[in-house]
Image (cartoon, rainbow, N blue to C red; front, side, top):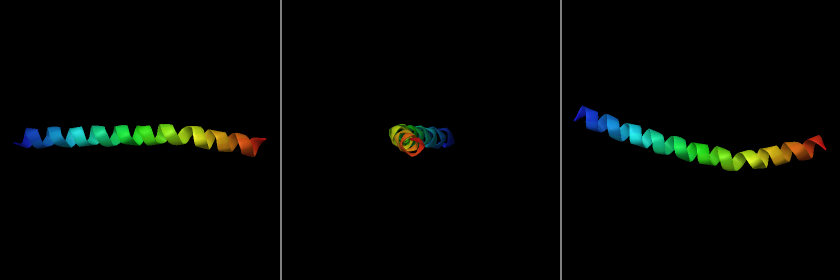
Length: 40
């Protein structure tokens, strides 16, 4: 039972980190674009 709970917790962590990576990946181009505007 404990192993099953741990596995589901791991799955949730994996999904959360994937969503986080996707969010960061979608935000990065925007921040890079903004910093380029500020530089020029």
